[in-house]
Length: 402
Ligand SMILES: Cc1cc2nc3c(=O)[nH]c(=O)nc-3n(C[C@H](O)[C@H](O)[C@H](O)COP(=O)(O)OP(=O)(O)OC[C@H]3O[C@@H](n4cnc5c(N)ncnc54)[C@H](O)[C@@H]3O)c2cc1C
Image (cartoon, rainbow, N blue to C red; front, side, top):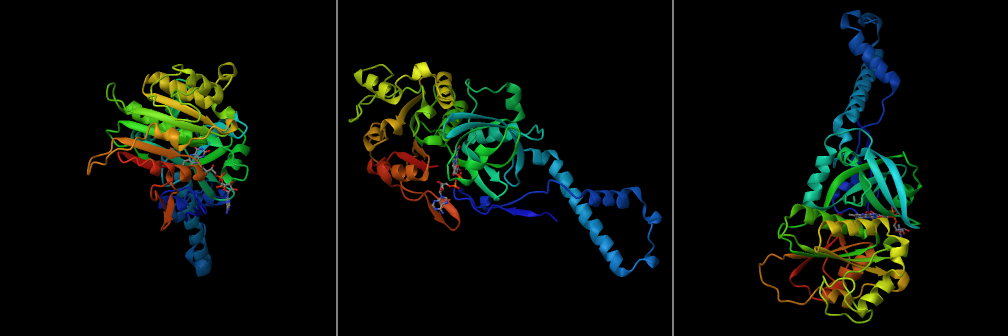
């Protein structure tokens, strides 16, 4: 019999799949396995040591039950070791090992994981997800039997992975440690080499073919899906047909975004009419912005995430721009900052929207920007558009809360 493990609590999940999970046992009792093999393969029926006449019905029933249980246990054990369970999938948890955990700031780290068992299929599973849009995987906290979703980072020129490691199915994550959070605290407590079980991929947002512009508003580790969206979209389109992507990233701590220099230049207290691609050094405003966001960023180097963003930008010159906002500097994303990008326009009935606003980050951040997501019948739904984006009346933009 396969024991089932319930994921008791999953507040961030958006599909019913995530509330429960079944996995194969990782081990079977040695004595059971041994007895199975000795009774089923080493001893032919004719040489059975006990005869019907010398065994009571009760003993026979017990023996049969034991043999069946042992066979089921051994089968499950074997299945758990087959290549199938070595491949990331939506039904069962797949074992990965923690390769490294590199601090990005006092509260966040870059996690690198590799599949525990070899599988040729992991790369293909990821590829399919990358082609689709924004995706996540669920991490299991085994002691509490709960799971949380995290967003794999794409590979850029700044990524310290070899081609072999990529092919082997290594995954990287930018994870913030919530001081009171169950799973993020657990993950930050793990030693290198520890096992972590993942399930997925879960597609969070399919980016429609034909998307021409994306405005990505990210708070904290919400930058991970922004990197994904940029990578996925630019990777799957050809030159001349590529969409423009503007990322607005708000961080709490300077260390998270150190070295990041905003591309779009805005005065601190009034929006300018400059375009997305106005460059770094275009005006006196640009100086104040640079100074505000990251005073000595060049000297201090760049955070791991800024490096990834810069690498993506260099890979697709002119396609991606990024603006940085920093709580430590009292720089918050306001309505005026968004108004620069979201211009009111007429809704054309039935016309497909080629512009997409994606909002990603902590619950409060998403609520402030676009209104809260809502729960109905055990599923997390988008909920009505509210917040400062609603006030800007973005008729020709589709909006998606991640
Ligand atoms: C699709 C998706 C992708 C994500 N990707 C990432 C990613 O790449 N990186 C990342 O860091 N995060 C990501 N997240 C967020 C992540 O899934 C977790 O929500 C986050 O790590 C916090 O989980 P936790 O178990 O540590 O905290 P939790 O235990 O869920 O607690 C979170 C906070 O809520 C408070 N809290 C808990 N219970 C209560 C209660 N009953 N009353 C009041 N307060 C309470 C806690 O004190 C804590 O401050 C993603 C989320 C989603 C949905």
